[in-house]
Length: 235
Image 1 (cartoon, rainbow, N blue to C red):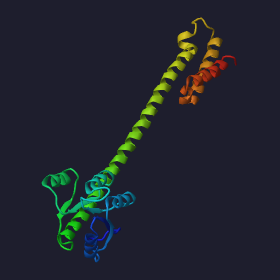
Image 2: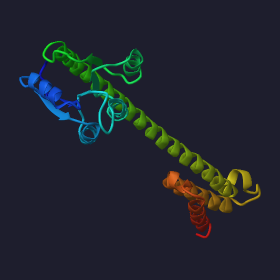
Image 3: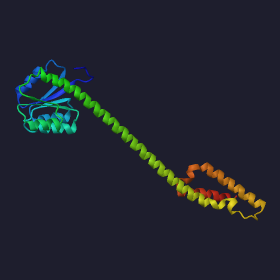
Image 4: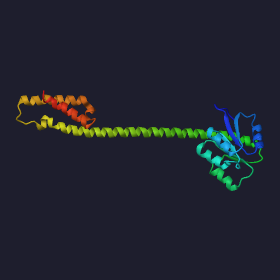
C-alpha cells in the first residue's frame, strides 16, 4: 500500500470481543489507524464524529444493526468503503448489500485477516481514493456551476437595469424634444432669436452629454436634468 499524506484509518465493528482482538492483533504491524466498536450505538457515535476510509461491520449488533450503519454511511459519507464480516448471509441479503448498499466486500467467518482479508483492505483503500477524487471533482463542478449561475444572475440584473434606464431616457428625451430648433422653431423667427435658441440647444446638448447615463438613472433624475435645462432659457 502506497504512502499518503494522511494515515489510513478504519473502524472495525463486532459484538464479539475475541474477534476484535484477533483483527487488531493481525493488523498490529500495518500502518493503519484502527478504531473498534462493540455495538451499533458506539459505532454510530464514532461515525458521527469522524470520517473513516473503511468501515468493517457485522450484521447482528446491539442498538443499530449492520444494515443501519451501512445505510447511514451511504447517505452521510458515500466515499467510505463498507465491508461486511459475518457468520452467515442469505443470497438475497448478499444481492441487496452489493447492489443497493454499495458494499465493497462480504466475508464469512472464519477468515485469515493477514491473507485474503488484508488484500481486500488494500484494494478498498485504492477504491476509497478513487471515490474521494470523484467527490472532489463533483464538488468542483458544482462550485463552477454555481459561479456561472451567479454571473448569469448579475448579468440579468444589469440588463434589466439598462432596459429600465433606456425606458427612462426615452421618456426624458421626449420631454426635451420641445426644445429642438429644427422641428419646432417658427420659420419667421428673427436671426437674433434663432441664435439665442441655438445657444440654449448647444448648452443643453453639452450638459446632457456630461450627464451621460446618469441622466437616465431614474425619472426623478430626468426631472432634475430637465429643470436644469429649463434654467438655460432664463439666461
